[in-house]
Amino acid sequence: MSALFAPFTLRDLCLPNRIGMPPMCQYSACEGVANDWHVQHYGSRAVGGVGLVIVEATAVLAEGRISPGDLGLWHDEQVEPLARVLRLIEGQGAVPAIQLAHAGRKASVGLGWEAQRTLTAAEGGWTAVAPSPLAFGTYAAPLALDAGGIWRVVDAFAAAARRAVRAGFRAVEIHAAHGYLLHQFLSPLSNLRDDGYGGDFAGRTRLVREVVAAVRAVLPAGMPLLIRLSATDWVEGGWDAAQTVELCRLLKDDGVDLVDVSTGGLVADAKIPAGPGFQVPFATRIRSEAGLPVAAVGLITEAAQAEAIIAKGEADLVLVGRELLRNPFWPLQAAQALGAEVAWPKQYLRAKPVAR
Ligand code: FNR
Image (cartoon, rainbow, N blue to C red):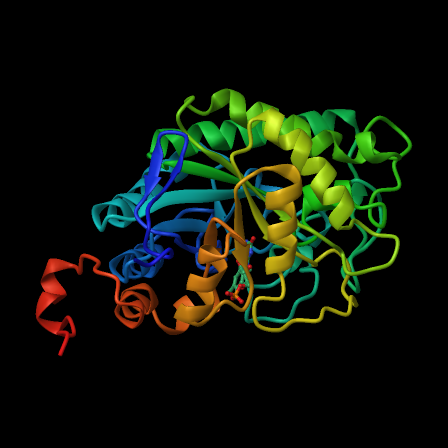
């Protein structure tokens, strides 16, 4: 009996297995609107047997996009094209979720395959906002948000979550990792504010908790709320694992159902010891010390590796990113390797390997 192919329940949601596709920007939207690329991209991973599809970072405000190609949910016209994407995901038996995001000081750069530098106004760029006027690496310095600007961000997350529910998504993930706006508030390296949104742990975590409360309030009671956190900045004196655990204990009471545990992204020059499953221990620690379900992510590429993470109780879900870009059929092939019986798309049944 494979642990990886056992179902998993969060609130009213039942995932058919423990394999998720993490959010991965496609930089292919126009004015935040999804198109045929997104339909085939997400649809093919659902066909490949993934249990949970988390649609890429979707901006809650136009100025919160990383690039001009990001998806958005800041106005109503963006809802139906995304609904088309999720209907295909759901039609293949996978659960559609969406990551809601604001890029903060990492906004207004080129598409993922272009030079990563701040776009000029002539190139379609805009002024980024952040907790403090501190630039990320060589990017342009952002403007510090004032109290009204912070309120607008909280309100935009709630409005985007409402649109995500209207579109038909079954779960929402708040992006508070990888050095984007909410992470910028958490880390003492990027948040130098001296008002109620900075300073001590309570101040730096306030915006994240306000966004969680505002989003939770607009989700149906049975719908899970996920949050992606960077468990460490990988920099001395930055955001770290102990603070992440402390925050997760609070988020549990605030209505978060699962923590998607990543790391890094806050500063451009952090030394990250990347290797197979290198972020899993952070997920395991949060699971045991904060008592919340977790997803592990980062260089999980082998069926046996993923099976062991779930079987040993190191995480509740595994998210497989770049390996799913290389091979959309990874879950079906992992089932085969682990001897788990899973349903194949009926159109492809004649290609299903037969046991000898
Ligand atoms: C990403 N990643 C990412 N993370 C996130 O939280 N929101 C996002 O929109 C994106 N976008 C994105 C685009 C692309 C092309 C890649 C490759 C990655 C990070 C991703 O979700 C994941 O955490 C990492 O890729 C690590 O997992 P793998 O790829 O080692 O399995």
